[in-house]
Amino acid sequence: MHELATLNRRGTQARPLDKQYSGRIEKLLDGFEPSFEFKPPLPLPQSEFTERVRRVRREAVLAGHDALLVHTGSAGWFHASNLYLRYICDWMREGVLIIPTDSDKEMILVSFFTQSVILPPGGEPIGIEQIWQVGAIGREYADRPGSSVVKTAEAVTKLVDDLGLKNGQIGRLGDRTSAELFGYLDDMMPNAKFATANAIVDRMQKIRSPREIEMSRAAAQLISIGTQAAYHVTNPGVTDAEIYAAFTFAQLARGGETGDGYQIGINQYGTHCGKPYGHVVKPGDLINLYISNVTYQGYTAQTARMIAVGDITERQEKVLAACTEGVKRAEKLIRPGALMSDVNNAAFEAYIEHGLLTSPNARTMPYNWSPASDGGPRLVPLQNVPDADWEAQGRRLMHVYPATNGPHNPNLGHSVGMAGGNNSFNVSSHNYDRLEEGMIMILHTQWL
Image 1 (cartoon, one colour):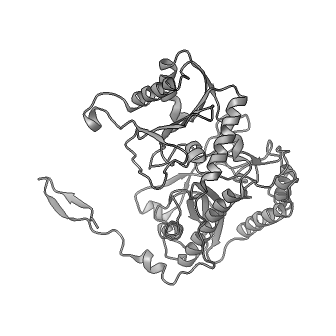
Image 2 (cartoon, one colour):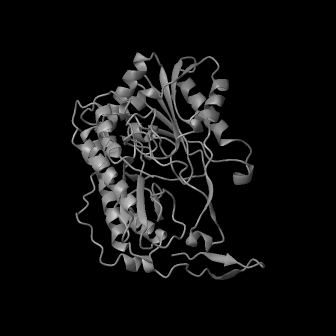
Image 3 (cartoon, rainbow, N blue to C red):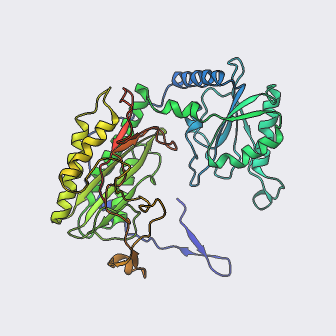
């Protein structure tokens, strides 16, 4: 193992940096055993991706497209910016996938155009024979002139031309990282008719196959194991970083793909979402583990768990009771055919009975991230909030977060599926869709 070393001003190596921690977190986890055995499901079979490509091509035919261009960029920290390539061909990094609508023409992947290199496995693209490496270039990086984005656009243009589709109707799937590339393609293929085609794959995120459900269930199990590890180490005197690390170790060690998809909040005021900053657990604290995303094989789950340390206030007990009752009331209505609005409203009835809300209506509900009453920006209250652990680092907390009391969101929950995807539906008072078998959603009647 390499140790991180520093260089002195003469450029020679100094002694290795001292370890910041003494290994207490490892000792805190001594004796930890989850309450169940995690049995990781195998990756999705090739047949599942073959079926997806068939459906994608059929949608392209109905839209009149001669080909599709699917772009996924990099969003930093070695994360793909959207789910499109992983969903279509199980490619977990950046790339441009060329999908001719004609099924007798092969798909082509253009990739490796950033410095955020992740080599397979995982991520051997399924159903792809041609893979073109563009290369990361530039004066500072490689002492070579040019732009990797331009080179990618040139490669895609040539490959589309070779297929005889340069002047056809082409659907494009991408996100905000795609704008520069798509702009160059507009210039390089002036006779092509481009159309936004994200909806082709977005629609497929609403209903999950049995094997996809296995993946999301595995992600949920990893969350459960992680929270059990957090419970195991939590005691007065333990830091937020140690609790976060215990959760992270437990889920990553069993196949989780990322350790940065969640927040931890600890204080005596409520259950704020944040990152570890050195808070030391004290009696009277509420601990919120808001697990926005744990990923297994590209599929995610989400949950929130609270820990009360010692005695808490009557107000806190009341809020926690309302949250718990809300989830239980919603669960009773969940079945195929139920209206999403009915499930939402059942949860918020518990809030109303506890005097926290007057209506489950999303349009009128005060929620944590709501704008001002006129629809404009809301001023965050200026007030010193004592925080000894933050102040010990030379800082002060001078604003009240969040700016309003209320539910975390003006709705009960939303769909979950693949990492990098948008919600395909919200469980809200104004959603009159019916629940269908194969939907995966989370319920978070949270109050801050």
